[in-house]
Amino acid sequence: MTSGARALSGRGARLALAALALAPFALYAGARLLGYMKFVRLGGIAAAAAAFAVTMLVRPRWGLYFIVFYVYSGLGNFLPLNIAMPVTLLVFAAVLLDLARGGQNLLTDASFWYANAFFLLVSFSSMLVARDPALSFHELNTYVKMVLVTFLIVQLVRTPGDLRKFSYVIFAGAVATVLLGLVGLSLGIGPGDDNYIGGVFVLRFTGGHENPNRAAAFMCSALPLGLFGARNTRNPWARVGFSLGVIALIVAIFSTFSRSVVFPFTFVAIAVLIRELRSRRSYIVLALLTTLGILLTPRYYWERVLALRDAMSASSRDWSVYTRWLAMTTAWDLFVQHPLTGVGLGNFILAGAYRVFLRIVVHNSYLEILVGTGVFGLLGFLWILASGIRNSVAGARRRWLDQPEWVRSLSFYSALSGVSICMSAFFGTMPFRYPLWIPVAAGLVIGNLLRADRRVAA
Image 1: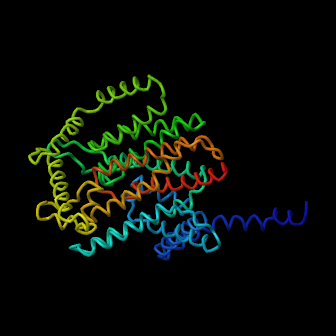
Image 2 (image 1 turned 60 degrees about the vertical axis):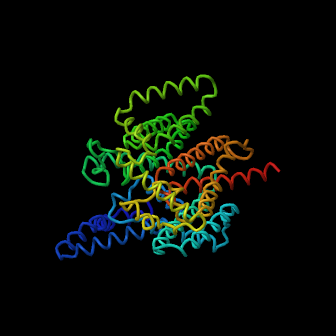
């Protein structure tokens, strides 16, 4: 045995190790006796925050995944502080440091940048006629956040493997919102315990989100990514996990009693069946699933769906339908009066007050943009959405040469996710919500992969 080994095995070394092990307990007891516990807590919080910040700077992709999970899960409704923006700024700082060291800017899609420049110009022009420019500035601030997160996604999600993990994080966030919603209901916390349908006292499930319609739209847009995981993973346990997650999302979607989600859900179901079951059986399975779904869905849900036939009637007995009808018809009348300039981005609440007796939005993202910025603003907004989703469609149709075959399948399901949330946007105001822009960013990532694959083919 060497002298060093003898020293470590000696009595002094054992005493030193024992003292080191007992030191945290001694410090805790001393701080408690001397009344310094509040400083210890502050120090612990500061140390944890510093460690978290360093991790985000060193591993910005982890920070991006956290932001996406945070958005889809609705975790912010259960935390005392909104930590999404600090994390976003940390990730942005890490990306800027990488660019300063010679990193490459990957968001080079000309169509995306031209569309944003055009939309921004029209939005600023609409502020000249806005009743309250502060409302327009608030909307533009939210819009800038969407562009920033899109930029971060394209910069950090670079490879097919990154894109697959990114899709799984979206799906995991959607499944987590179901679990958070159940926990919140059982403990009486979170936003989901006061969403009842008037007159019948039926609770609408909201997951971790504050609005059942929005929760349904977000979960439905994540559903195709779970289907991709269930069909393309080789691990049997992972396949079981994805399948259970898909079932949980379907049950949660219809538990929101959201009428608008019927349309994107039906579109996703039909598109998946036609693509994955390329035979006559696909139509038989579709018919059986549709019949089974109708039989298992609570009758009151279908009563709410059938009430949509009164949506175009000013005498609708459904208060929700009536107020939305009133808001949309008022927005259309305002657009007809101001077709080029609009009434100012985000100013419908004020401009429509002469007729709409409630302070509500249009409940249609495209009509909200149309009445606020005019026809050119809507064209710019649609251009932004198309600039990303078109790449997902192209990726689903391409025979990839330099990438795994599953990239084609992932492109198809990413396109479904984008189309699903775009359809939901017809029934809710969410033009500057992350789940509407995240599929655009995923499409831009697929666009980068497409260009790389074409260079290999050439």
